[in-house]
Image 1 (cartoon, helix red, strand yellow):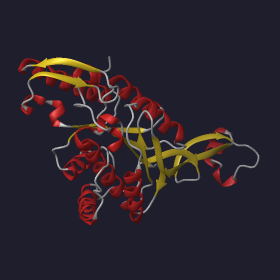
Image 2: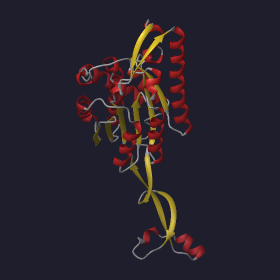
Image 3: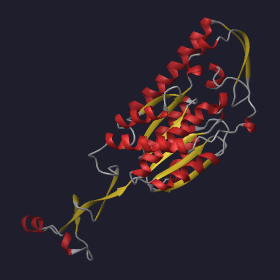
Image 4: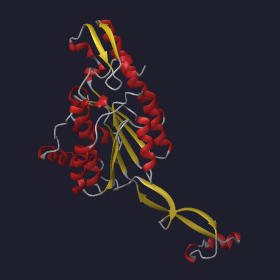
Length: 315
């Protein structure tokens, strides 16, 4: 059985086709992003724009290496000192800087849509905020919405005014389907002509597939950041008052299980959920991938500023 089934994650049945998200992208939200962008830029003041660079040999200014001279090479790049000392004709190679894109990937699977889709709405706010700060800093920003049945991508864009394309993409992104972090990350890697900073926002209720997907991106030279969105009710249902005989339903597989909920069982569940989150965090950090736990009770702008303070996305 899957993790959600064992742990009872997701709550109960819902009419998946009827899920309709509120439009959060209004003038007030844009004003929040503008203020957030100002504060975020103060946090990273003094650092050069688009410091995230890919290094390749070319016509830049910083010396990288030598190679043997070949007919047709620019004679201005010959290292005359080496020729004089060693009688070898070598050409100097230089590092060429190229801006890396910021990719923002949001999980739109069924487990993100439970209880009024509060987790997905929170994830969209995070994505929009990171996109706005990146666009305002002249980064190239691309978006992907993914699940086991959906994969929609907004190609990389640049410029603060393009935030409205981000809003429109998030409004119209397909919703629903099983969690498939590995499959989604594999498609992101295949679509990426150039690795960059890739931020994945999800509840990650697929531990092995989630880590394998993130690690695949890392193996493909992406700088991966994991943001795990947590509903405190799912993490610790002890305060919900739910007791007695209930039927737990896997929202993505529709498998059900009749159980009798007691305080001891709910405590065991909360401990299992914490172990799940801690295991993912440790796996990510052991591979050098920043991990952030995002409790939906925390204001999204405070979370984003915490990420910037810790240097998880923009540098």
